[in-house]
Length: 428
Ligand code: UDP
Image 1 (cartoon, rainbow, N blue to C red):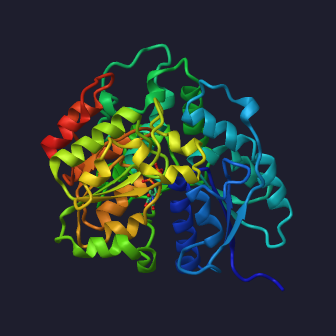
Image 2 (image 1 turned 30 degrees about the vertical axis):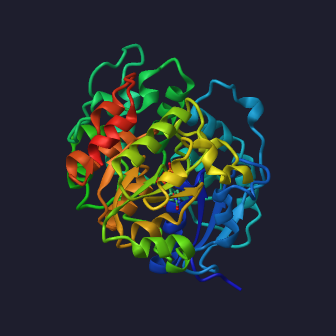
């Protein structure tokens, strides 16, 4: 039978923060644009059935399980290519590189040839496959246009000059020193080279999709289209396709958590979560616990095991059954003392459903872009606690441009240490 629908191949890099927006893009292509879609997924572990990230895969918990095909690429072990000092961008880039032959083989064996390839920021090295298979090729940035504008400017920076001030982006809000991505500060680190490579790869795509929309970022989107200097740096078309967020599925929020939320006053509960990869250290976990308890603020806290010196730790660590025992990470007696005040949820909560509940009045968030959008569409103000990647920029955007967030300044000054609970007590 001759297929009647165009076929799109989407590639999601590891981490739910990358998979979720890709799935939502697939849903959009299928339901609004009549595409047949296959999503290829890269995983970080050989068998990761105990990882909540992977629990989402087989269930396809979206509008219809038949909406798109989902192919988990067979695990490729790239650990031999990594060194223990490699940071997040390098690790993801090395991991992804190992999967190029797998996707090549998959595309080569497909009966209904895809004519469109969409990759995310960590998949730009797959764009050459589109040429091989005669496909049009797009990069989907599951973040905002301001981040895209900064990224395309990074290759122009002088590697030899140490950055000490803000970054000026033609026609856009400047990026303050404290908000600039870590790789930009350390040209000696491999992350810098990977980031520059990704930025240059973007120019080889036919266009870029961004999870934003005109009303949210009109100035930046205008400049990406019209600013002469920016156009000279990057002349591809940018499509604001957002907000693409996970739909609320009421059946996902039930049991004790729903009953408890139903019993709380309207907009009284602070939801505390650091996304799928965000991780606090032991000291930060303790400080946060004290902050919540001393503020006497109602809360729901999605707690995962602390990992030292790696704000993105959960991205790279499998989570097993014993992580469900949350009390071991908390000050002694915390759960008993806060029994009536809040709920500690181990590892993973139905976030979109929680944020949509009428009792939620605030979100203490790491400002991953998906979390930020989910908060925005539900009208929930944010207390920002960015941890890694472009989260400082996201936090700056929602605070300074939209005025729907507060960002306790002291927390985020590079190299500054203090007791977080003191700050939390002040703002809660
Ligand atoms: N998420 C969730 N439950 C959790 C933690 C995260 O459903 O306990 C979802 C959240 O709703 C969002 C995604 O995971 O859609 C996290 O993406 P984000 O960009 O906010 O952060 P990242 O995980 O990339 O750091």
